[in-house]
Length: 426
Ligand code: S3P
Picture (cartoon, rainbow, N blue to C red):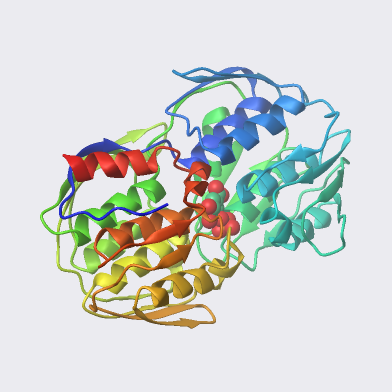
């Protein structure tokens, strides 16, 4: 795909529903009793993978244009699938569902696409095995396909070496079925949608600092959930609105949960003009409208506890840094290497091709910004966040930028190119 240029971006948009929250709504709704209704659900390929896995385990899920209806059968209502469960490209599906599957009274094979079958699963196999789970990696490489034999589990206290909401959530979900309380402590607090939403469904779950604790065997009751717009999807328009001159964009109804709002903090620290309007809470999740105006940005240093709150936005932040004056240093972000692609390598490869001064490091990157970027032939490596970040980079680049496999945005934002085009044409 040839990517567009823009001399201004104007208008208003609503980004699709939050991916993390959409996944959890389907999973927890399936384990609750009664019909859970979900509006503004993300119709991206990842969340559709989660729906398909639960349908294969006997849960009726209606996907209508207005809402998703999940006819949950309670904690013990799943049935053995007759086929392999396929999580597609979705790490959240793979890791969270493993915690649930570990405790069922049936066995399953869980797999995914080529990227999923390379991503590390030891991080969940280790704590779930401590609980008594029987999980093996078919190819003995600690990756999917995973063979999961359902069994009884015991409660544990797990000190996670990584700040990962997928690891935390996997263990907490297994904890729903354990023989006693289960706690997870992480080095820094990762996104807490599982804790907020499970509590709303009726689970006995508490949080203190970076430890979350769940007690087993609650009665989960169906809910109505309105999913806020995904701040990870809004990030592309925040960045585009800041770097493209003469721009003003109002992004409505964005989830700004403090465990996800690092992009806002960094954009403001870089000198971004962003007004946070109409702040409110919807189903325990903080939301707001964001008014973004063109700004001259400068470099920053990012590391430590803010990293989990903006981990998926780092490709976009790197592009913003390329257009900002001065040096940006991103550190403590080695997790980027095990996302949908190795995002340290791929962001560096693509920015180098565009003429940026970027040095990849073991746990991040150093970007000397302020030089104009030029168009180039880029590769998304089928990573949705790479495709979208570089569609923003291309807006201001001299000459033509081409993106390979640009349609992978379907994973999290099927209407991305149309929404961008609408702002360019206004
Ligand atoms: C997610 C957690 C994060 C994030 C991913 C979604 C979730 O992954 O990168 O896109 O929904 O729990 P990690 O838990 O591996 O950091």
